[in-house]
View 1 (cartoon, rainbow, N blue to C red):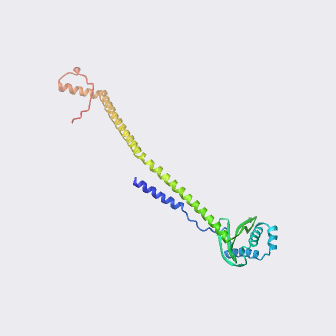
View 2: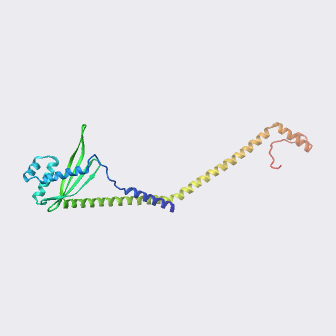
View 3: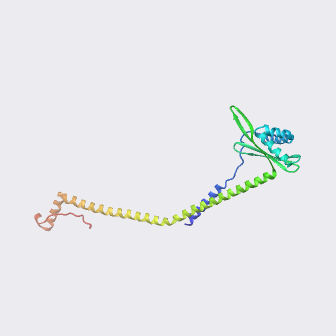
Length: 257
């Protein structure tokens, strides 16, 4: 019983180690230089900073894709007087996924810091391959922090729920396995009885075979006319009687020498 519990605990530890996997850094989805792609994103923000209000309105109303998005978001921040004058670029990072490179640049303004996040993907068109921005997002650091905190809370809740589910599942499995232990003695008794019955049947079969062998030997001896004649003559000579006064019916092998 103790050995079984030790084995179960060992299995639980191994499953726990497997379930708590570590996330390794993803390889680059395509070839690029970190400094170059960061410089491109910084250039986007620098160019938007230099736009006049008229240019922002024009590009926000007449452009498509990421140009329209960045102009709309920057115009909203400027209209709310959220930023102030540009000061400098503070930080940058690149996150690689399976299919994309996500570049985030943090810039300092007089009133707040902003984060510009651009997602780049490799697009294949026939034999041509190009790296293009597919998504762009401009937000203040306070909004980014709030979003990050909300994502952290969601992730923590999901991890906690997953951990609880794994623990409950493992405890249920262990309880089920332990509940089966009570059937082990019954199974052992059943197997031992079956084995004893087989041994007994073999013993009975052997006795029957021995009896049959003895009877067959007696019949063979009785049917051996030459042996019967020799024994009859020996008896007549020993007892000084004639062979008509008795009949040899059975011949048995003597157990005494």
